[in-house]
Image (cartoon, rainbow, N blue to C red):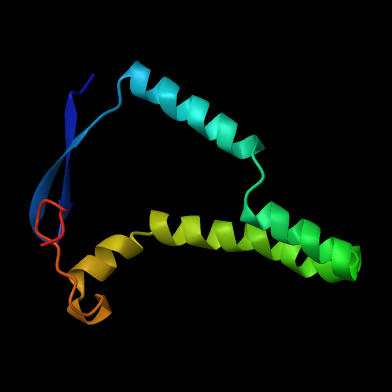
Amino acid sequence: MFDYLYRYCNGHQFKVCLMNWQEFTALLVLATAMSFSPGPNTTLSTALAANGGLTRAMRFIVAVPVGWTLLLALCAAGIGALVTAAPMLRLEGVTVTPDGTPA
């Protein structure tokens, strides 16, 4: 349909290319493989349950998806564009050029 999209951030125009079917298939395979691999949250919740019992580990087990949901919601709300646009929110000494590469 479209070969590319244009996004605007902080007054600059960026070209965003759409994924072709090979890239989308690779992303789907990676996401499927990573969803079945035990990450640090799974390992930590298992260790908490083994050491303190399931009732003590339940706070952490519930907090993990809540934290991920909050993180994804902030990203979807455009917190990255806000940090880029507001100089007070940037890390000290880190500058980014309009094309997104560190300067």
